[in-house]
Image (cartoon, rainbow, N blue to C red; front, side, top):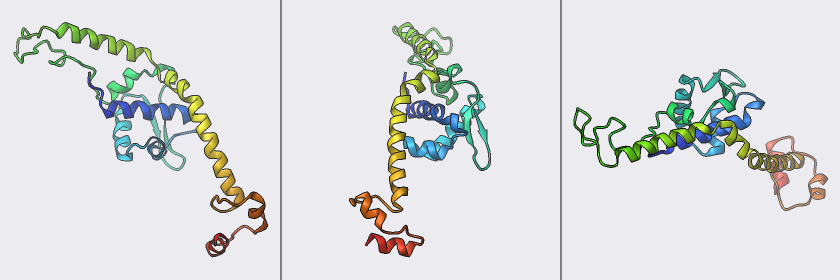
Length: 187
């Protein structure tokens, strides 16, 4: 089996979506930024996921993607198969003609070994749901978002980018009501 970046990125993006969809549709731009995956690549992947009824899209302001079914009903195998990721370790692509003959009699000596590995991989990936993966990540994502929220709140509270100045120094100056006033305050 050769799991390429296509399968890895699709699973990663789907975990991100599952973690955030409770707040409404999730934008691909947001996933792209958080997971450092090209937006155009995500558009291709989500087009395939939509055709397999794994995600739904909402257009317009506030639009984005949501799951088309519950996260516990979507498996890793579903995601990987939807994005055309082959789950095959055999040389012949599962056709039984490892040496290239048309009749399928040219099986290599290890064909059954790799075919059994394929079966085990599909069984395992079918046993892991998107909900399982999202639960594993919830604590990590939550603590990261809490840190981000605190930093943003501090910046908004100060009315300017964070500096080494104490809160009391920041509060002494009025908030900038223009870019020019803001620039003067930082200098």
